Amino acid sequence: MTHDGTPPLPPPPPLSDQWALFLDVDGTLAAFADQPDGVSVASPVVDRLDELSRMLDGALALVSGRRIETLDALFAPHRFAAAGLHGLQRRRAGEEPPPPAAPPAALEAIKAQAAALLRERYPDALLEDKGEAIALHWRLMPEAAADLQAFAMQALTRLPDYHLQPGDHVVELRPARGDKGEAIAAFLDELPFLGRRPVFVGDDLTDEHGFEVVNARGGISVLVGDRAGSAAEHRLPGIDAVYAWLGAGA
Ligand SMILES: [Mg+2]
Image 1 (cartoon, rainbow, N blue to C red):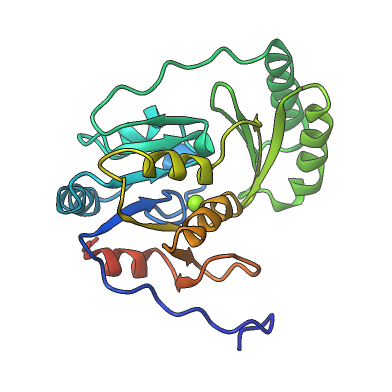
Image 2 (cartoon, rainbow, N blue to C red; image 1 turned 135 degrees about the vertical axis):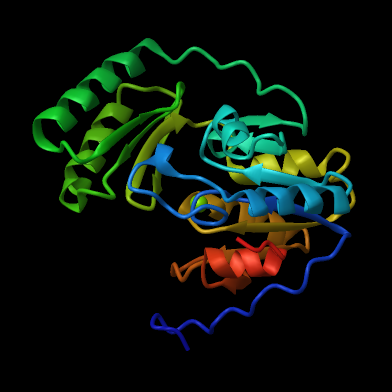
């Protein structure tokens, strides 16, 4: 039994070429850094993902809270199929990212207020501008958590059709449409994903939507780490275990 009384989850089975493989990025394929733009993915891992994508006839997609443009930079020179901004953006392998939507005017004012709050009170917290979404990170300043969450809650009242996406040392304000589960379901409706058994690996709260979709379709849901209360049915303890499972020497 684990600390919260739930049975420990088994590891996922060995990779199969019959799968459609969906992979979160931060906390799954890439270690967290002090700042989101400090993250990188080692080239043997990137190359192994390209190999796996070929083995799966292209049925491999990154499913991340980052923008697809940022994923393309992290995984260059490859342009994997990808969902970005927690499912708000989606594109097929090799294509350009979808054009960015204009953020609502209220979001610009909120960005300026958030920047001022950080400057005055939480200089080691971070505002990440994702265009239509913003994220407030407090990895380096845990004492800012309550105030930044309160700021985001208040800001949400001025952003119709937005919602709060909580995460690991972060809260995000993002358009309410789309989630990782919907993005995975949309990929599964089209080739090369169609008809394959879905497998999704992720670590954070935003990944729960994906786990639910994959479970409902007889797929394999894999939690990275030991977060309690996950819908995932399998578990890998950390990024190194993900690499080992994927056959990626890092
Ligand atoms: Mg993650």
